[in-house]
Amino acid sequence: MSQVQCLHILKKHAGSRRPSSWRQEVITQSKADAISQIEAIRAQIAAKGTPQEVQSTFRDIASRESDCSSAQQGGDLGLFSRGQVHVMAVRGILEEGRGGCASSRPFF
Picture 1 (cartoon, rainbow, N blue to C red):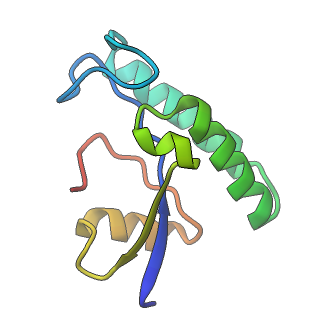
Picture 2 (cartoon, rainbow, N blue to C red; picture 1 turned 30 degrees about the vertical axis):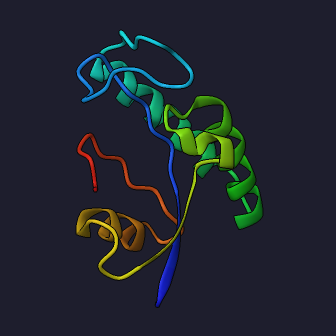
């Protein structure tokens, strides 16, 4: 595998390094609430059948729910080669197959 495409959904909480986003000027939710939201989103995406449905649903949810500016591109961070992404992110992507790595730590 020479490159992987990376899509992500970021949910910030009050303890985030910068608790604000394009969606909300001041984020006040707890870390537990952010994790709960990500788990619900992950379940919603995982329930889709085909890879096309998974990607379409992911992009739709990311564009509405992600606290990252990549939401404007459906959560798309682009293509990455080995060594460009933190090893834990790569492990999560590869272990889950078609994606899905939940973490409360920054990968970059």
